[in-house]
Length: 272
Ligand SMILES: Nc1ncnc2c1ncn2[C@@H]1O[C@H](COP(=O)(O)OP(=O)(O)OP(=O)(O)O)[C@@H](O)[C@H]1O
Ligand SMILES: [Mg+2]
Image (tube, rainbow, N blue to C red; front, side, top):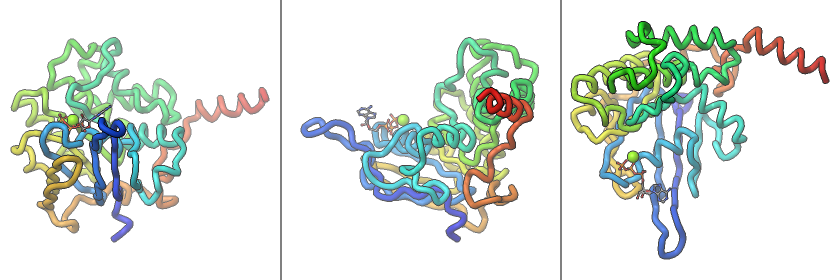
């Protein structure tokens, strides 16, 4: 079922340096990802895992090859639209949480909604309900350093899901956590996956692969092994199918324009 294909990577290559210093972080990398998969990527340090996530997350570009996202070749999407897609459709979770230190966690979580067209109040309201889901509503005005590592990672997950993205990319999200906090974080990711999100997660911990529906081992910028542990027909129903579609692309999932932004757009037009 081709409509269930979310990501296609064809012959993806990422090269650094030239001549004697030339090296490849990814080499002729082919991968097809269906909606609703929970993929764990493993492999030795330097094999290209972060490079792969960064390219999928539109944070980096391949040197060669094609990246088809939801049927669209990423190379033909303007960088402005790529930023919007990144903010609305892709949630990132990093090993070191990447929270902004001098912003209260409520505002950290609200950040991806900047592109939503919502008013600031609506953005904070949404952020507040995302924090509530992770039992952090009483700490909304704490700064990141006032929270434990596990709590900070839950804030980061709240930030990753606040704009209802379809894809969650997580680069060693439990790498800095003890086993109890890791377990809590993995249970949250599991719940997010069961709601129909596609998750691609890098980990060094083989014990976590029980959460995955597919485990990919990388070696030297290529796929070494690729094992599906859950059959395609048993994956959770993808969220994009649950949402009524206008067109079969990301634009159909964009949030409605807020009253405030509509008003200011009209005002600007009148000024011209
Ligand atoms: N900006 C850069 N310039 C040159 N080489 C780079 C750059 N970024 C990454 N690389 C190289 O690309 C390769 C893949 O790096 P990447 O960060 O993707 O590895 P990784 O699998 O995520 O490793 P780790 O498990 O240690 O996080 C490495 O050999 C790295 O040195
Ligand atoms: Mg890495």
